Length: 310
Image 1: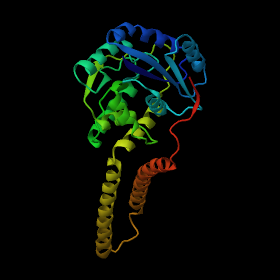
Image 2 (image 1 turned 30 degrees about the horizontal axis):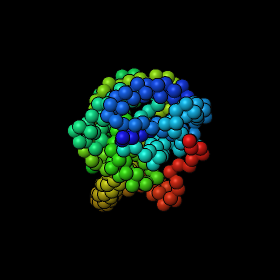
Image 3 (image 1 turned 60 degrees about the vertical axis):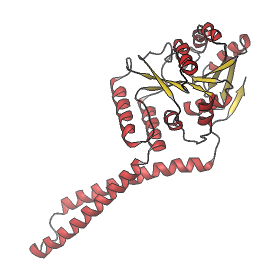
Image 4 (image 1 turned 90 degrees about the vertical axis):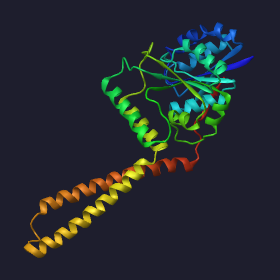
């Protein structure tokens, strides 16, 4: 009998823990027909509510429910990595506790793995119903940007909801980088992937932990992790401004030689200096972001620390 490991990263999801468990068990009959067992791994990312207590209750009545609780909040990427490390199944699936990733898709996903020979089955939203318009707009711009500046495939609307064979999981775990962007890692490791499309499903209970600022920083991590194009952009900008400076120097020399009026035009000079200074700071900031990522990598700190494990 094969085993399916369901990984559920949680942060302040006490309202959804039991509800998710009940919805998942509705697919148990379909799993048994395929002779597939089940283990459910809740990864608590330093929740400050009663998420851990709710998981303990489930563990007491069903030993297939496991808990990995962090010592503090390390972020969803760390939660995903920890779940993949702890999973022992032949098949592994990542799902959100808020049921925006419908468990009803699992039988269909397993069909593609077992019957059609795919290595992983990924999901993507074809609509963003329920999301703020400005958030949807910038999300689409981010995916379009990544398509042009990165060689790694990152699909528009892709979710973390993904069913994988053990070979794919092992490949992901071999990438031990501290600064993780899982959507990019999925694309980088490759393997034969089937994409399933479905309409956006709103949270059942609770509120999302992702605001616009957190999503912006997350997208910035993705750009820095899977593209060096910003560094090339900095180099091009530097070359352009060097050429402009050379032209301005020649212009100033010729103008002074002809008109003999070196003091006029200081307002335009101030504007030019301000513009160049701003561009220099922007370029330094981009380079600094890459250096900061390198700094965190060479520290070789653990991606997460476990406080409790059931």
